[in-house]
Image (cartoon, rainbow, N blue to C red):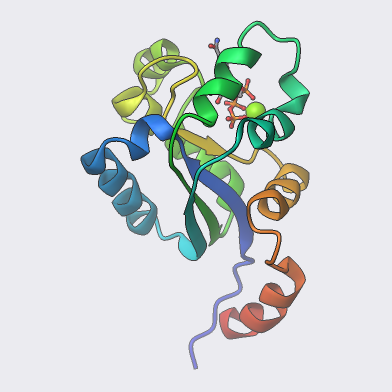
Length: 159
Ligand code: RTP
Ligand code: MG
């Protein structure tokens, strides 16, 4: 049988409203996920109410960009994914590139934000930045999903 010793890690990836609004960019990002060997565990399209946005970004409350961020993230449809891979969290963040689009274009020209980002707020994608935030964010977007159950059912087939 096939054996694979690699441990799967889960992350939460979001295609933000600026990118979902453009069908070709949405498709390009979906293909990038597949090409980079992520397993798409779950995905859903959704629209946030303003209060969802405020709750998700509570840690940024008071920052100068908070209002525009909250408004933008509840301005239209998004697509959320639970992605699995070895080192999923850092791999997805590497594909996204730096938060600030100008910086992304300068130091990481091939990344998602460098290619498709519009501004430092409208920067195409989100990705969890740690195991703890991945757990929190997966639960935020997919409250019905159980990480433990999924791992139990899936991990054996990767061993
Ligand atoms: P994220 O949390 O979305 O993965 O992004 P990040 O860690 O790379 O960036 P963070 O500093 O946590 O900021 C969260 C989101 O806020 C928006 N933002 N706008 N100067 C601005 O206008 C500004 N700075 C940050 C971005 O949408 C960023 O993803
Ligand atoms: Mg962050």
